[in-house]
Image 1 (cartoon, rainbow, N blue to C red):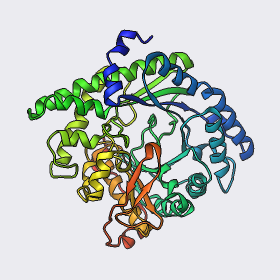
Image 2 (image 1 turned 120 degrees about the vertical axis):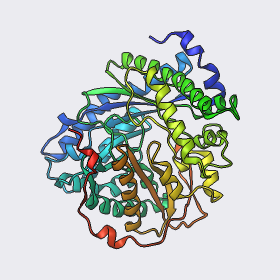
Image 3 (image 1 turned 180 degrees about the horizontal axis):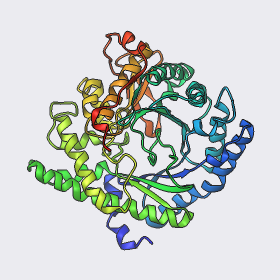
Length: 452
């Protein structure tokens, strides 16, 4: 049970520093919804989600009202649909996406993740159907999110899948050209994908997870920035210690909220994700934290070092505050969702190449990056491959959420609204990777994958 004195400790952080529970996400296994008939399977999927997650939104709202903790999003993640549809023999999984969307709207959640495939070592026929269905599925639904895992430290990188994802992203952008390529904002490509991620667009319920569980993602960039103002000019040892102590307080609130939500919903508590997830709101920016450390602007020399310190300190402080830490747990750097990142990108101080370097030390990767609409599928695939290589070699989760904004060029902006924010269109290297991507095959796993 959450005690009131524990909530009172966070009042200042909530009222003045944008502290919130970024999401309560219910993970639901759909393995028992498989059927040889896709219509029957879709009905099972819809019914199960509505039955298990019917009270999720109300529970979140009750917790907000009783304890004064803002819970920004209530979400659902499900078993990767490529696994559920394998026995149907269907040539398109768009009906699944529409069933998921209807269920999400019925229960009132913000997003539903799991229109996904895991193809890090190879693609089954069902995986191919799922990937081919992504553009239409995301264009014809509002709340469904999709992810594809194309690599891992143990498996290497499936370059056939990487090549196909470049084409898929282009097609998704074209089908939602009237919305700035909105479908791409709901699609993410992973290396080392995790099974208990509560954040969208990459959330799915892994096969190693229980029947149903509740995850919580906390966030508090504004709280960390405020704490660092009090130690301005002091050595990095002090900075790291300050971030650690602040992360503990933030995560403790998430742990307490997760336990309460689990009890009320009658399902197990999964994990708390420690990630610092920014929003477009002023005072809720990871970039601002880095600049508080002494950088003139995010993207300046020293940015990667500052981000490495932040990411490490958040993990060290947060891990002691929760019985189960998981998900992605780090600092997010989505350009369109962080006011400081947006400003730096517009001013030309933050480039895709610098962002790529930053992803070596943070969660998760090149996130919400708008690029010119005429960017080729091969270039998109090559950027994905670069990001996957960083994850594979460093044994960490990386990802790419790229948006080739139709009709847009460098200097333009794409407005997605809400938490997705406004993305400045960033320049990309125009050297062609066409022959590189055409090779296909698989990039072998690194030597350090042989741990047994």
